[in-house]
Each structure stands twice: as structure tokens, then as C-alpha cells.
Image: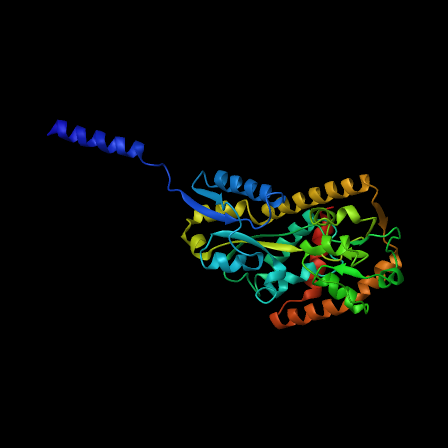
Length: 339
């Protein structure tokens, strides 16, 4: 009997040593942008941070390729096609209207600062009134913003010069700003800007940062870029996880993941975009592109042209009980404080 007990004890001990020290949860992250985009490295670094923070209990894997169209990332996470994704907030205009606010014109001067500030104002101003829908939000971030570019030898640095052009504009705030000035911009997805420029359908473009112009084949046609103190728009993004998958995690692992998400993840993503923008701008200037600082009168006129967009956002804020002016003042203050 004694020997039998020892044998049983030894078997149990061996089983205990062979059993995993912890239960492992594997989550699938879909990154819809091409592998060349800087966000892939950011996402991979965050996945490593999650693994470290959870002592290997939560592992983030990535899809082999994009599994859903960019506008449908949130719906795909909600329905369980994959567990984690990110989406441009322009596609959440109806579901998350207040996340449109920091993409309005003339608010962002550096993507890293804006990303951190956006996360903080979300937690303070937006989440209490209009929390992120249909998934658990992990972070928010901004990409570098767009200015005004000319593909002729004359830089665009006045309202008269701008209005004399046929312009391509990113849909949303940039196109709306030009429409307020009485213009009729060609507004298409950014991927089509190279076609518009190369075929000389337009003689200038606005709303995209240098790395986007480079990647979508408009950079080689660019002769000058007029830069403003803040960009005409800067696209913001949300990163989120399926609610059921999040709720199934232990509180310890939720806390660990949160510690490397939020502001930490936002800063990483924003900094990566800033580095990519600077590299693209340096490359373009080496090939003769001139960078022109905007005339103050030109900037003031464009700021005034954005007024209707701010008025509409204020109305949205009133509907949801959020003071948009206070929120955006806080956003700018927090962003500028990081310079």
C-alpha cells in the first residue's frame, strides 16, 4: 500500500511538472494595411509587449493577409472573424461621431503628440458620454497630417492661387474646406491620388502626408509642399478587441494588457508615423521638392473656411452632452505640452 501511494504521488508530481505553468490565450490580430506600412512593426512590438506583460499567458498572432475590407474591421471583430483590428475613424462616423473631432482641420501638428492627447481626451471627455461601440477599445492614435502640394513650378501659398487650381483633396475635412471656398475638388480615396496627378487631371493635392503621397505614386510629380502650423487633417484610428474575448480574460491579464495599450500604444503608433513622414519628406526634398512655409494670411483664410465643420461638430457634442470647444482646447493643450 505504501509503495502504491508513493507511485501515485510520483505520477501526480510528474503530471504537475509536465502540465503548463499557465493557460495560454491566443488572439488573432488583422492588420489591413500592406506589409510595407509602418503600423505592422508597431503592432508586432505591441504583441511582444503583451506577451511580456502577461508572462506569456496571452499571445497575439497575426493574420496571413487582410481578411476584411478597411471599413468593415469593427464588424468583423464583433462577429468573431478575428479578435483584434484597427480602423480609420472616418469609417465610424455614425457609430462614434465624437472620434471625428480631432480629424477636423488645423488641430494636429505632430502625430505622436496628437495620439497621446487623443487617448487622454477620449478617457476624459468622450468615454463617459459615448463609449466606443461594439468592442473593447485598446487605444487610439493619429497618423501624420496633410498639407497642400503643387505639381507645377508655382507653389500654392494664397487663396487666389489655390482657387485657380483643380485640386485633388482627401474626402472629409480637406475636401469640405475647399468646397466652402467655392471650389469643386476631385475627392477620391487616397490610393487614387497618383492617377489623378500623373494624368494631370489636377494640378495640386491636399490632405495626405508625404509618405502617403510617396506610397500612392504622387510624390515624384510633386514640385512643392506648403506646410502649415497644423495640418488640414490627420486621420485617427481605433484599435479594439472582441468584447467576449476581452471579458474572458482574467482581471490580471486585462490589467497587464491595458498597461501596454492606451497611451503607450498610442505613442508608439504616432511616433512611427512621424518617423515615416520625415523620411518621406527628406527623400522628396533630395529630389528637388521645395518646402514652403504657409503665408499667415493664407492660413487664416483656410482656418476660417473650416468654421462650418466645427459648427457641425459642436451640434454633435450638444446632442451627446460634450462641450466640443472645451474638449478640443484640452486636446491642443495636451498635444502642445508634449513638444
